[in-house]
Amino acid sequence: MTPKQSFSCILLAGGKSSRMGKDKADLNWHGQPLWQHMSTLATKAGARQVIVSRNASGFLPDRFAAAGPLAGIEVGLRRSHEDRVLVLAIDTPLLRVTDIQQLVAVSTNKAVCFASHPLPCVLPNSLAVHRYLQRVLKQAHSDRSVQALLTAIGFESCQPTHSAVLCNANTPDEWQQALNYASKELHHG
Image 1 (cartoon, rainbow, N blue to C red):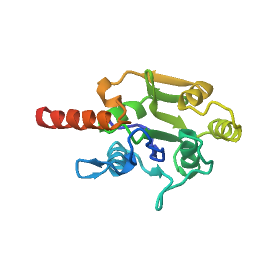
Image 2 (cartoon, one colour):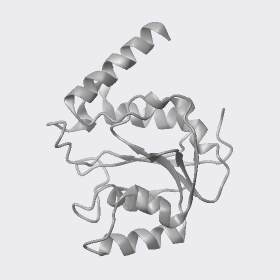
Image 3 (cartoon, rainbow, N blue to C red):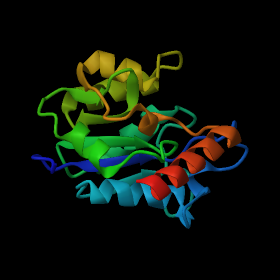
Image 4 (tube, rainbow, N blue to C red):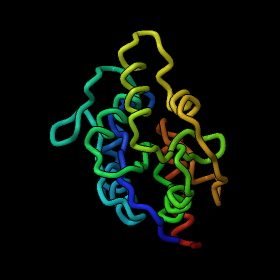
């Protein structure tokens, strides 16, 4: 399944990783840093451009400090060359190329996500989305969640082929579970 429309990708890798106890983006996923694995995954799925939003040297930093994932989305959309943008969270290492292709293959002018999961999602790189982000990020007490963004701009959802691929690895125990699951899939897949 190859996406019909071209898209770029924003990889959100700038969180505090406080529950993990160390930077999730640098965790070792089968011999490479997790940010690199996720970036490669997006490229293999067809992304023409991968923008890594991360407040570290060599990456694209947020323009709005301590504003959560919307700050990474805002700065990434400004840098994107495509009309559709896939947004990936760094902590979903079990995603597969086919899962991303399923998401970006949905033909709509709205945002797209998997049912009950705001991330990953595909956003239109539109003036309406840019205006929403600017307004919300400038307001100190606004809802800065990805779900609020999706609700405000309108979205469609689809069912993932396997729910385990959407599991987040935010703690050392969840990370170990993801590694165990991937290892089991590798030996049985």
